[in-house]
Image 1 (tube, helix red, strand yellow):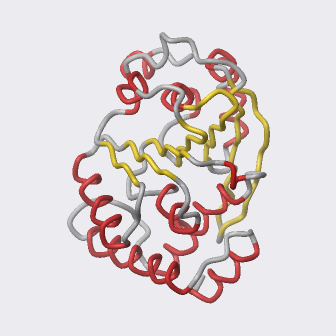
Image 2 (cartoon, rainbow, N blue to C red; image 1 turned 180 degrees about the horizontal axis):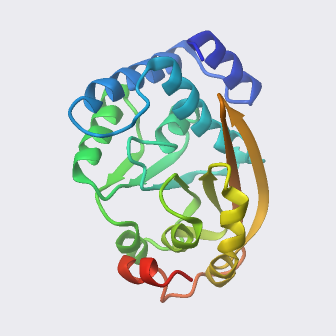
Length: 234
């Protein structure tokens, strides 16, 4: 989508943006394309595709949360090039964002984006999610992950970070409901229940966003070391 279409669609999902915010998205897209020439950040770098498949898709996941204005703290696990957290931060600047990314070179890119766009209250942490969760467990109103791992593994990396009564947002492709079915034991053990499912059609792609409410504290033995999670998912 072009910038006019993007602006219209953002307004239609209650995420209206100013000219200044549109310029931030434009600068972000340019940085992504430039930096992608020296490191692997995304297969999608053309501006209109970035606005559609990265920016709008990211914001849409957050925009569909009822009463999202009550969300203050937001952690993004394995954000890669900053999705979904940074597009959401641009549209909803009140959020306090923590990005957990294990690759140092991607953290360097993310810090450059934050600096260039003048974003405040963004904390970029170069760490593995399971290590970070052992220190910062149950601190966030919302925790998300987009295209990181299968849900039965991903849930153990993300849910320990979610506050009681907070939300885990798993942004999945067309197989989202199958992944949910395969992760039912893990989700129950980790203390969440499925609250909402949104199937979205973005460009030619079908995306399924799964929203889980934290209804009980996660047992302290989770998350385990990643090797154990991978070898023996819950």
